Length: 151
Image (cartoon, rainbow, N blue to C red; front, side, top):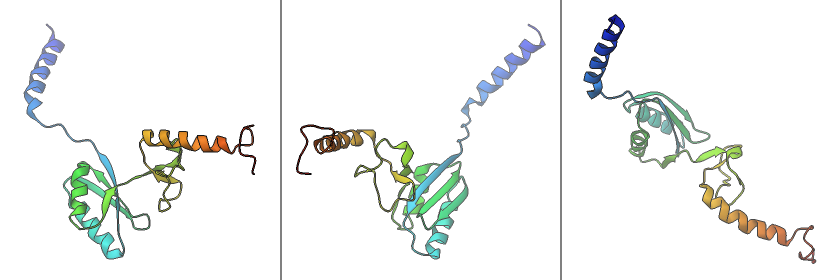
């Protein structure tokens, strides 16, 4: 065994001795939808979220009712901290409409959503609705010879 082999052996022993240490958490971004009415609400939310252990930065957008926290923290802790202010809060429910297969089904479409965003819904919900919607679309289609002739 040469010098390199000895060094590898010793580093392996040292790393196995350090396995009791906790791994460092990965940086996360948590987006929340929080009901905020005034600048006082914004400041209160900002203060509470920045007080959570591990939060590095907090961004608040009052117009969209969105709070974004970035850091080495758990989403549950941030959510619990905001709930302690007695504000209506949920995880950010919106995604860009390009990521949703059928963005205009009743479950996804939301008038209160920010521009170019729709509610995040499971794919199983869109399958049921689109099959029903397709039936009605075909029923009144110009290409269907058996379609309704009242129109």
